[in-house]
Length: 495
Image (cartoon, rainbow, N blue to C red; front, top):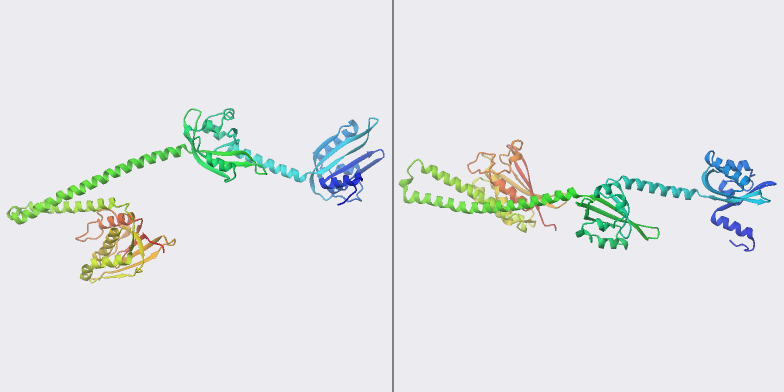
């Protein structure tokens, strides 16, 4: 827009439009009302609209706003007092607006002859202010009523404002907090915690940070807390202050300490038990072996000494002792290797190796083993454990076959949905297990479920422990008279 800078009215009109501020005046003698274009625009009336004083006042919302503008306008005329008020207005189109009305008298011979002023639509400003006020009110309510401790802290670390939860947590009053820097109530060993993160916060590298630290209660006790700190900046990014959320985790820390103490005690007890198992398994095995050897010598060198009713009982007792010691030795060996590193092993070849070991047993029972495992499948395992696991499951399938039915064992693989585990499926057509009766004790020590001369109730116990030791687990499906399927979840190499 171009205009003549010497034309004051043109300059005034430009300023009004740019600032969206209208002008108005009321001449009292002779009576006349004049509105600028911006003032008419705010009222939603055109240039042809005939303005009368009563009509002008009626634009103000009935009630408080209309009463106030009437009061101030009359006071301006009668007592010469200017006014500057913010009131509600309803335009000719029915739109509700907030306006700022400024009026001041023009006097001649101490008598008001004219009232003139400015008129501005402040609806958007009011909306913004209300939103800000609402957010501030919501923040204040959230801050004051929060169940965790909250504080507004200056960039220098001084407490500006604290809520009731923080006062309760640490025992200080609001006035006492305002005398503190946050490091004044921090445990001396934790005063530098978070310094590097705080520097990153101020440089806008991070928006917040969280640490765990210790505070000092007014009574001298130590309070463990989880501290979350956020930076509040103004519109141009200049840091203003910090908002800290402080959650009391003292009970959790005390519980963790108790748990860690119990773990240390348990670890020590386990170590003692393991040492005891080693001593027992080694020493008793040696003694039981000596007893067996002595009894054998008596049978061969002094046969007449064995010709009594007591010797068979002693012989049976010694054999039972040897078997018990051997079982204990196997369990002790298992516990010593729980943390042995896993080795990549070809599963197909391991199964064939087991088949060769059991070849005579398989032929004797007219059995068959079908190895459907992919030839190049590699699993992560302890090879000795894998041999023992396969030997146990396959030999059990033959041992507990149905009478007069040739044992058939099918071995196959699949993968879990997330491909993290290989499922080794060992399926037989044997006697089956009544899982309704035996599921909970299926893998227990010395638990047997069929009458068989070789049943000791130790194989499944050891096998389960071996599978778990290499990071796997066992599931079982079985039906009496139909057969049993064991599902072994094992770790494998992902190609």
